Image (cartoon, rainbow, N blue to C red; front, side, top):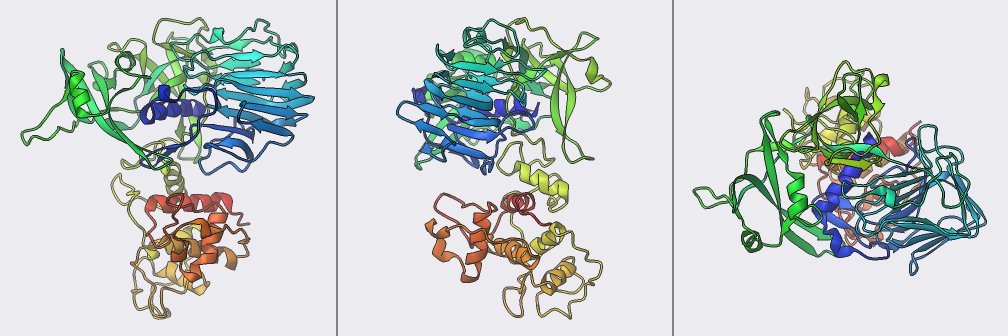
Length: 604
């Protein structure tokens, strides 16, 4: 189920950040969209090692096991024995032998073509849509064998995402051998409630594996609109009214989007909410948004436009728009596989963080239909259900409100337990990782304070935890240290003694450690570099940081450590042109850098 949430996140982010219909076209979408700390890359084509779920892993920092032939609007690393032609949006495979790799296409255009020459092999093909297209034609005169090792569930997986005219076409002269795992089918498709996926294929045979051109079985799993009871609570926004609907509850949000070229767009997003006495909470009325908005989003470019459409803000006595104190469960998905149980109830799975193992484990949720929103289900944790007695719900498409989908890809890491660390922010996984590992703790209550800073004393303590250092041999006396600002008896004294004694730091001057000084980004890199070098860890990686406009601001002593940190993938710029070396590192940035260090730097 982890994989299903990325599909939800992808659809939600696209709805929120960019009007899809404005970008429809035949070739791959070019550019990226940024909203606050989110970065969304709408288009890529890559060749990646299949993970344990049978799909390429999603990693904003880049997947070292992937070769990109198209990403973020530019051509990139080529596949072996292949040629990509942007003008014709065609990828030609020449005797490509890659039985462990997946060809992953995201919004690569409605006319993407793969030409097969000679005998070629792949682990799988994933074709993803959206209004930028996503259809696939496989042509040529060769033989393409997909998933012969049965590494993945389905040889071909399609996510039309409401792309108009989406299709999968096989040329007359090419032979495609599609294999499936025991619990899969040669070709699987995902679609939404408005889409009939059976129109995509001219497939009829249910043989596995099929070995004839253009013939395979397409599988469809029933999934539903689902809202999870333990999802994070989100406020409605500015209270809004609509003419002709005096009882309706509306919320408005001002959204700012920054594009890759630096240009910005602002708009107002409006949602209607329904109160459910059954569950004593509000739910977003998705059907209303789909009926009254474009691409399922009701948006206005200005207050005047909002008012002319019959909406208006609710103002307080001071004449200010009223921010609602009403909240609703935010975790919403259109990609939940539905199971039935002996009791006739319907259930689904959702991965939750497990305290004992530190990993994600599937939890079973009972699906209760929301009376006020027929076809939408509120999912609550279910106990006492035996997983092996769950059976997939009927493959016959039921009443409206159900979607015909297949599981999506994954980049979901669960709730962090902090009210100021929402799910799926760029720092969410790293905060969860560092807290569970015991490297960093919150600031009190249910807050992590991601935008706050760390002092040098705090980071030395964290470094000791990363190193699993035994500090029991150090006392809290400060007389053996040359630093006047290290006070005897303080919580950080042992860690400072450990770091200074091992040569990991020399302080900010001969008599000052900088105990309460904010740790800067270049200092953080220096700490990790020096620690690694002193412990025989390879620090040969180095990036050319002169391409950053502020590279001259890097302190002389920090140039090598910062180049190593960037080259090792621990630190990236605060923008495409700035490293901000002397900026204090935020707690969120530090969490990401620490996670990257622990996961990517072999320490023996």
